[in-house]
Image (cartoon, rainbow over all chains, first blue to last red; front, side, top):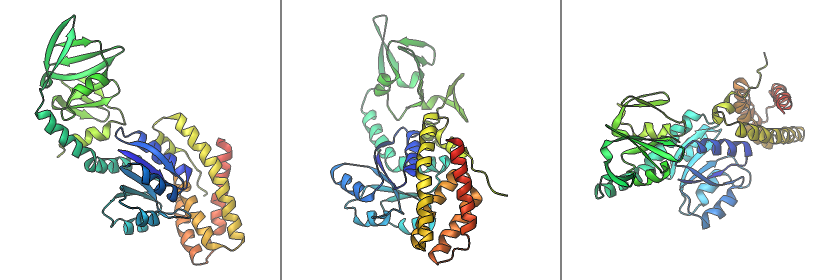
Length: 235
Length: 107
């Protein structure tokens, strides 16, 4: 999700940027203290989302909304709840965040955005994956070993190597998590920590900051937790 | 009793990222004194509409610094100023002073 932040207060922009940093799917590509500058930027740049303050000098957030041609999705950031509710009627406004924005509220917003942007992409990936082989070959001592995706429980980064834990074997392969992640279907696997990718179907249970895969307790990083929670079929 | 500003919210947002905390505090240290001066100048010039706009910005910082009571007062004061009512100005000034002292202390 490519985002920009529009707010005349540097402190407010810094907070939104920091909150976005914890969401892997969000990439803040620019920030603007002035809505006019942001409008100019949008003419030449493709953006998915704008975090938009309402009370700004010169051009306000409401002016921005009314002026923007084919506007991207917008999340309002404001200290004025009533004003936000009023502007919420526009279909491209997905959410509003009352300042100061709490981490918890921002994560809820991120989940909402996930539903709008990412889920559609995952559905497309799933369709693609269903037409692809559900297996992976790894090179161990010049032998190519076939692993079914369903057998893989988790993958752990260990320096220059990765360790792939299947239902009955642990393989050590000279590779990186980034490389193997590209070969795995997003619909089945998720990186929950900078050192771990897990197979969703192998989860036994989840506690606050960890997930249990068979007998392995895998840490969940703060930034990956929202996506994990979003993917769960919660009752 | 006057509320004391704190860094709880900033620490929550940073999740332990000290670099962010440092950078953020330097932003507040630069932004707040300017906003305070602008507010006082506008108030002294009886430009209450503009004063209300600055109070609006300052109230966000009061929230950031954990001043729950100060934030509520600022919400009321901002509305009052729009109607030409300045009776809360002394209380608001006390809050600004407390924030300024805090900023100097952590600087």
